[in-house]
Length: 419
Image (cartoon, rainbow, N blue to C red; front, side):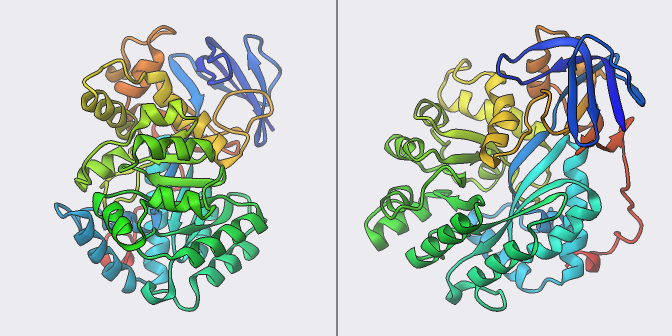
């Protein structure tokens, strides 16, 4: 069935970054028309007074922890990790499932149509994603057996998860690594082999804190990025979350290997990891920079507008240069760059691309005035989830008229439902 969104201000994010008032048609899960004509359609959606843009792609999350907001606040990362590992060891499948659904609806509410996750029990999270209807790129986390709370070998668990979840509508399975502080070379090499065998992404935390870097130098004589480069782990299938403590030299190593970096500014600042990743140098070196929320445990929300705005402000302030990064670059990180990292036909509004779309209401006070000249600035610096009128994932409407479709709060008012 074809649907036409007409008379919208379209931010295409195509190669030329065209912005114009016009119409977009999608038929099923694919975009079939973009332009000023009005092709015959089965359904018409009035886009007057609205901005139409591609859905946001969140490249680093732990959605199974979405109900942990407010539980681990005002502590440093090492204490945070201790608390979360204890929390994880006590969890049930029901709690992970309910928490994951909660986080998925929160993301949809914020205009996120796809996300990349790093967790164990991704089979449970996969069930939630298929039920909710959001694109979920789920990376089963691996680490050395001596550190894990998983039953069985984490690497075997990851491979079994990939094998059993390859033909779902919304879920794309993959493998991840927790980090160099709990994973040795053998774990990294096996994870890489699994990713190559099944042609998946390899998702990992990398150079998130000064302690991680200094401990790595003390233990193996190399910084984490330098070490992973030397042993052949880095490639264009890697999504490396954080990279806060990357040096300019390491930015060049990331670029040389075509690594995708997920910048998680809000989470990093809340956990006071110190420093700001060398994003301008990464871009110059050819790194594909994207954006992530991290978990509700360390961010407290999955608000992608917060992530976009704060990411820009943090680097501007750190470099004493308000022009060092532009709103268009930030929007690119959130859409086309993230789609490139995942190798999917999304991230822009073009014929043949996936019908993952969002509509923002320009009549909300936050977005008045908006036109072709300032629309990208206003998306990045002024919008918020309340301005998201509609969200479409794979051609299915998940939010309409400002209201989430399918979200049921009943039965989710007890802490036990989430543990």
